[in-house]
Amino acid sequence: MSVPGISFNDGHQVPWIAFGTGTALYQQDATEAVKIALENGFTHLDGAQMYNNETTLGAGIVASGKPRSEIFVTTKLTKLQSGQTAKTALEDSLKKLGLQQVDLYLIHSPSHHQGPGRLGQVWKEMEECQSEGLTKSIGVSNFQPQHLKEILEVGSISPAVNQIELHPYVWKSLQSVLDMHAKHGIVTSSYGGLSPLFREKGGPLDPVVEKIRSRLETTRGSPVSDGQVLNKWMQQKKILVVTTSSKPKRIREYLDTINVPDLTPEESDLIETTGSKLHKKFFVSQLRTISSMIVVRLKLTLPSNFDLLVIESQWFRLNFTRGPHHYIVKSLRRKSPIVQWNFFAATKNGV
Image (tube, rainbow, N blue to C red; front, side, top):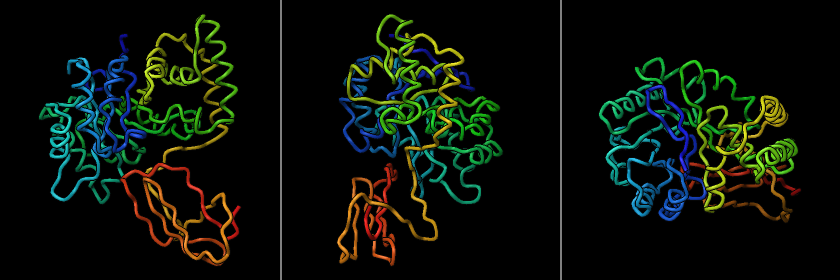
C-alpha cells in the first residue's frame, strides 16, 4: 500500500502518517511493534531520545527486512547534558538506531532549552546537523508562536514541521500556531489526534463523528471507523499524523484512511465547531505549580488520622502532607522526562 506524502519547505517529502514509538512503547522494547508496523504498511517511524528505545527501534527496522530507502525515520532531541550539543546527541542516536542519517530531527520541547538565547543557540546546532548530512530535515515539537519566533529570528532555516497535540478539542486554541505555520510553510504534525474518541468518551464530538462515519460508510460501501473519520479530517488538512497501535488490524485501518471518501466542507466545519465547545488537552508535558501548592482530588475517602499521602506511578512519585483543608505537595520525584496523566487531587474529606 502506497502512503501519500506531504511536502516540506526544504523540498523533502514525508509520509502523511507515522507510527509513534512513545506512549505505550516508552522505555519499552519496540522491536516487535516496529516490525509489525512496517510489515503492515507503515513507512514512517516516529521516535525520540526521550523514549529510551532507539536501539530497539533500529532493531525493528532490521527485523522487518525493509530496505532503509523505503523507511522515513524521525527522532527528537531531548534535554542536553553538560557538554552535549544537538549534533553529538544526534550522533549518539544514530549509533543506537544503526543508521547513518535520519530523515527528520526535531527539538522535542522548548522547555528543555531555557535561558536567554538558549533556544536560538540549539536551533543553530540543529541547522549544523542538517548541513553536515546527519539529518535530511529539521523541525520542532510542542512549540508555541513565541518559541517559533525566537528561532526564526536567529536561524537561517525555517522548521520543516512542528509536532503538537492536535485534535478537535484543541483546534480553536491552536489558531495562532497554525497561522504561523501557514506563514512560514511549516507542516503541522499531530500527536494524540484520536484522543477525543477514547480519552473523552461521551463528549460533544461523539455524535458528530458517528453521523459522519455513517455517511462515509454508506458512500464507500464498506466499513469506516470513528478513527478514520478524524484521521481523514487531519489528512485533508495536510496534517502529518502520528499514531500507534499494537494490533495489525488497527494499523491497516489507519493506513486505509486514504481510501475513505473525503469529508465535505460542511462536515469538516462541523467537527471544528463542535470541538470548540470543549477545550481539553490530554497530554501534560510538565507540572506547573501555583503559589507552590497544588490541590488535587482523589476519588477516595481518607481516615482523618492520615498525615501523609503518597501517589506513585511509573512516571512520578508525589508526597503530600495534610494542610488545614487539603493536602499540600511536599515533594515530587519524576521518574521520566515526560509526565502524561489525568491528575486528580486529594482533599481532606475525600470526594
